[in-house]
Image 1: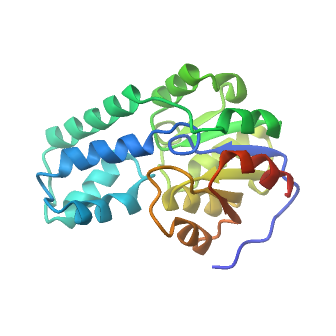
Image 2: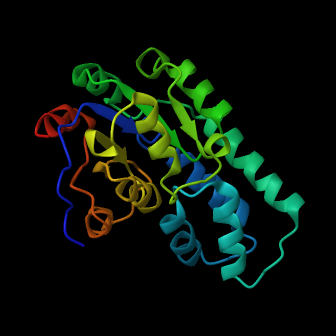
Image 3: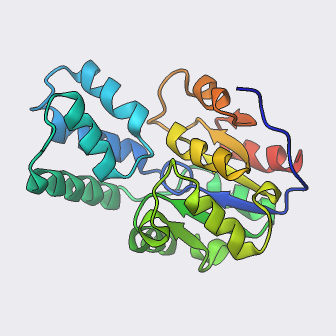
Length: 228
């Protein structure tokens, strides 16, 4: 897919949370591997099922994996138990993506968060890691807007809250799911590939769906954004 043309000057930033702001996706991956290893004994096969789906809401990710392994109607209690396990592990290992706090301070654009995690979890993570001052109340999540990524609703809601067109916003994403949503919303999208959970070839996959540029170190982010 060709990189889309920019629709206007970049005046606002909208960021994904998990894997971009909060270094949680590696913890989520390990928790999912532990929870699903009895269902899928081969670790390489299990990795291949999970990695392309990181960025989806956990319930959707699990339902897709269960369907892939031939369980069309999994026990809701098992799904809920795995979700609890993943969320507890992410909370236990809560930390910022290295360099992201200084990068955001250097950018100096109005900012919002667009996430598939729950509003309560995102708000708590931002408060605990010192990011709340940068994002304030502009937290747009699937449980609030009614549609999870790859639907563009969270990104459209963020742009609307600023009173600007999506084309005036730059989005930061690490997953194909999230980048698909931001591209569909009409934003300029940068893909972060520096997380420990990111599989080989992710930059190529992100560019194929319309991401403008990729980077693997948060110290690069202010310079990239200033290009636009």
